[in-house]
Image (cartoon, rainbow, N blue to C red; front, top):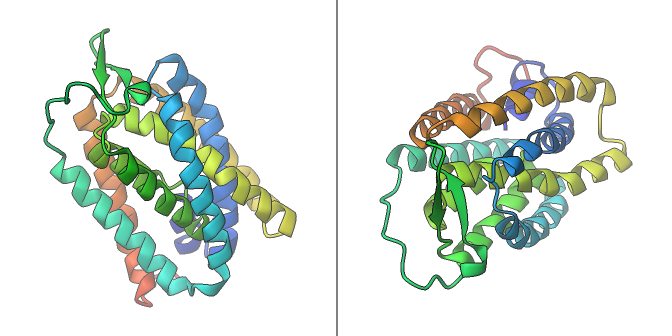
Length: 250
């Protein structure tokens, strides 16, 4: 999520180059932190498999569209998604009483409650979640992001998963989503390996540390951190969409 704006706004790389490097970074981050989430029992594997089918289809659609969409529009789409996600995180959601007899019982799961115990949750509104994952996959290919900024709010608000389960499951999925697109950029020669190497190394270290923090963090703390990051990235990206560089050259 941060690699594209940092490379374009600070390192002054082209959007296409930043997207290619970001996709490789996303795959490495997902692979590094997924074992920790699986060991802690936070990621919902069955739900991830179901949603990833729609996400991968969306990613393929995004690859077909990427050459026909101008960069300013891509920046604007990215900024808009970040703002919507931030608003949703700030608003939170009302915890509804789980209905008896879940329609998607096979996809229900449990998550650590932070006190050594576990809490069971039910998956709601699966069709809406699948639709949103298709859009997340499309944007992942277009913007070079892991689309966690859309997947986490979708699972949190639309499908009623706990925020920790949403984050861990999204992390597992983003690696799969980005893998195909990253392979395509590598084959096409669009990946700058000299730039990708240091970015991947830094991302790996951050993902391992982040996984350890997430396991111990509370849901409310995760919402605050996620909101701050979303807003911090949305502002400069929105500026670029309107042709403003905020003091950095394009």
